[in-house]
Image 1 (cartoon, protein in one colour):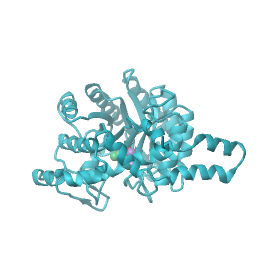
Image 2 (tube, rainbow, N blue to C red):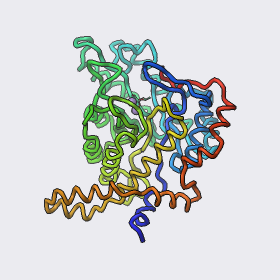
Image 3 (spheres, rainbow, N blue to C red):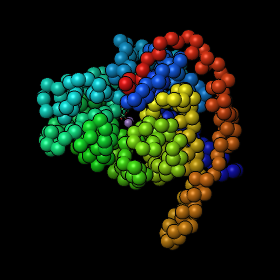
Image 4 (cartoon, rainbow, N blue to C red):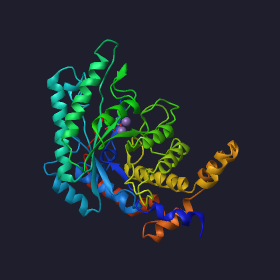
Length: 392
Ligand code: LRH
Ligand code: MN
Ligand code: MN
């Protein structure tokens, strides 16, 4: 048995949720680039996501963002997704594109605006009831631009009250995940800037409230795997929004900018018992999601490359010889321990993964299979007037 054979079964059932908004037109604050063939409807976004799953076996669910993905009948949308071999996943709230939220949403000084933002989250929970989704993801654009603009402490108190109201509306099998981001669009202070603040709020709420870690939401140089280790230790790491960045919240393809960081993060997920499929500790695992935009590259291959990058780094992380690592760590063998970790990182698993995919009836090379499938030219011919992801 090869080393890869020994870990292959743990790759079985790996699931990475795709964001519906990755398939729409997107860009930066300077320009949104239109692409031919992008989805015009939520159904078309789901169809594109289903293509990614069909070719990789890695992406069985699609996250929706409300109101970007608003439809009349969510149960029907779920049935449509199921017919394409996928399911609906996390429901994302959106309180950042409405004039009313200029000074905040759940933290707004005006109780009427806070009520409107809470109502939006409650509407999203109703959608979850129809779609069977487990997670409500809350990310807030709330914050201030100038010192003294509002009372930072009061905003925390308002936030705690609003979150408690939302949390109380969840059913027993639903969770709230609170995403943090240290900057943008507010520049002086952000109301949920870091994992500690998110942790403080979700810890106060209860067991079904967890932290969502978006890899692009940290200051440059932040040791993200340390945060992963700490949150798992506290039992509060609910999910990831994966992407990669060079400078800010770049939302680039996960594992593209820094594959070593992705490897280190997944090493800690496995170490902390947070890796879902075939998890010997019996945990349901931390949810893996992508939160990305493909501004200049084609969207479907961008998503395929992304899930393959996560799979590749997961395989390398599973190959880590934990016994040898532990022995080196226990004896203070600094360079020996580092070498064991780097050995796993430098292992090229691409040929093994290709053969493993084929053995399960999947294309050995999903990128090539997509290029040869004719799907891209089909959607470019069929779809005219695709919609924007939601960004402007
Ligand atoms: C905010 C964020 C959050 C939003 C998404 C579109 O930067 O990461 O997750 O919902 O982008
Ligand atoms: Mn995010
Ligand atoms: Mn982001």
